[in-house]
Structure formats: C-alpha cells, structure tokens
Image (tube, rainbow, N blue to C red; front, side, top):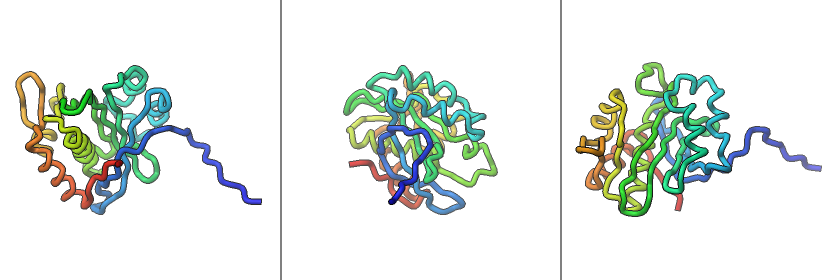
Length: 197
C-alpha cells in the first residue's frame, strides 16, 4: 500500500500571479508572486509574523487587519521563495483597467532590505514594483503611483526605480517609463517576470 506524505503546514489558497527571479548570492533565484484572498488567506500574516525574520518589519503586523477589511479594488501580493518563505509583499489599489495602480503598502523582508549590508538576496523590492508595472502595462494604466512614500524610501523609488515627484500624488511612474523599469529588472535578475496567463 502506498501512503502519501502529509504536509502539516497551514494550507493557504493563495493564487499564483507570476513567476520571477531575484538574486541570491549573485545568482538568479526563482520565486513566485501570489495574490491573497481575504477569507481564504486570513491567517497568512499571522503565521509569518511569528517568524524571527519579520520581527523588525514596519508594516507586517498591520497587514493582518488590512487583509481582513480590504475591498474588491485592493490586491495583496506576496513574493515567496522555493521554501514558501515570504520575501516581500505589496498592497495595490487597482480599480479598473486604464486607471492608475496605487501602491498602498510595500515592504521587503527586513533581513533582505537594502539597509542590511549582510543580505544575500537582492532586488526583491525592484522585482515587486516591476511586477506591478507589468500589471499596469497589461491593464493599460497610465501610471503607477506611491501616494505616501516614507522619507527614507524616496531615494529607492526615484534613483533605483525611476519614479518622479508629482504634485498631489506622491511619486509616479508614468506609462512611458514602464519598459525601462521592467528591462532594468530583467538585467538585474537575469530573468523576465512571467505573468500568469
């Protein structure tokens, strides 16, 4: 008789949205980006918040509440590695095609943040933003915006990802610059982001 192994970990219903790569020890490292469902994935942030790697997070603890009460126009995306460890997350307001994609919350796992000089995984944040940019491109959205960037994150958005200041809307990446960020990410990671068909 054949007995199948049972996985005792929590079973989430997250939905695959894209395959991508970041760099680990200077080599392409395959990851996946999933969207979360408010009801089916309600314990996602509670589970990971117990791990030491997210203890220094700014937003992680708030995401549990955010996930419970988000609307149909909001999307939660998480990037996971091969071990199902969360490398980063992003919450996006994405109402309809042709309207802006607005980044509400965005964070990289603190142990891989650019402020950590000992990190061995890079380009998580850039890859998540390039993913949202690819979604914007697909939906014919005219811009991706960061409405309330933190002061210490502004250099990353401007200098590393090509966002510009815009009166009343924080930082923006207009559609004319989508291709530049997407191609830059491909150059940095060695792979293209492949959206789910």
